[in-house]
Image 1 (cartoon, rainbow, N blue to C red):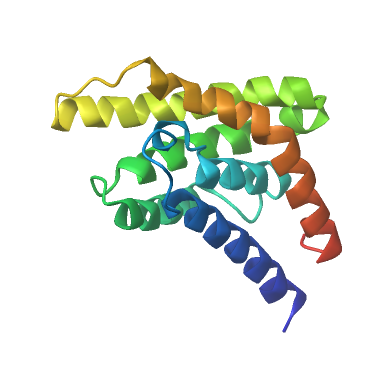
Image 2: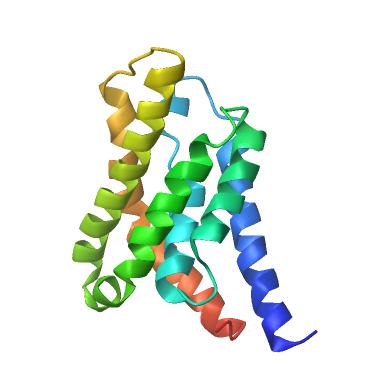
Length: 161
């Protein structure tokens, strides 16, 4: 397999693992606290390899996520496309920050994605979630350093560029 195909496979496998973590059964009390795994992994790849992961990748991953989770088709696609676009535009700035500042930037991106999902949910169902809805971006921001270090070591080990 070529180096280019090998890198695509590593990225695809990491996104598939994130999707599996998203649909993994959890106790009822823990479901509202499930991290935005797919968004976090997509953000890592968009920041690390903006020439390979773009808005189109965010859209395709979002459509697959919509099908997997049974949400309105295009809900995650819109959020992931917008977040991928912002991450790609700011990737050079985000990469030079220390982890705690990166986590704050990721928190903003995760909140943007949640706001878009809230907008679509409110427009289609008229539901308004509680405060627990906003804990998920905080959990994602706290997980960011470990996700970053893990995916960076995978990227270096498999020489994905």
